[in-house]
Image 1 (cartoon, rainbow, N blue to C red):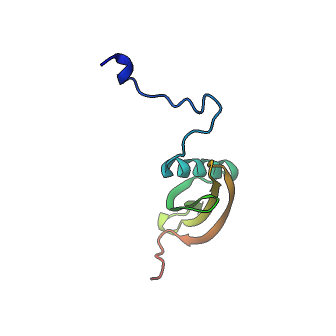
Image 2: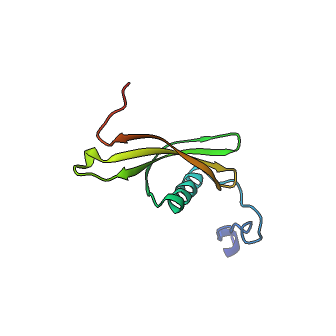
Image 3: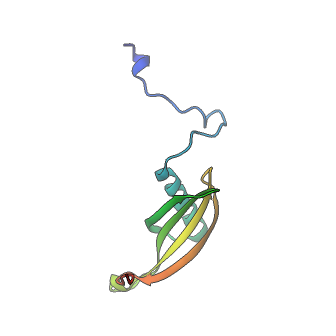
Length: 106
């Protein structure tokens, strides 16, 4: 086999101005978290959900809203981030706030 056959394939779609192939869920979540941080200056602490929607993706992110000592009293918020098929943020909303040490009732 020649060296060319072993060379990794390059994705030239982006270089040529075309939209690259559909991204995986991990890439969608990463982009949503980055855009959320750019708008709010709140660093997402975790992803608690992701699902495909009619217009793109819906991602749930947990964010520290108020750091406290001890850390079990820190206030966390869950945000829903909506992104389109291209991974562009369409909107976000805070769904709930809770104390880190609290457990949801079952």
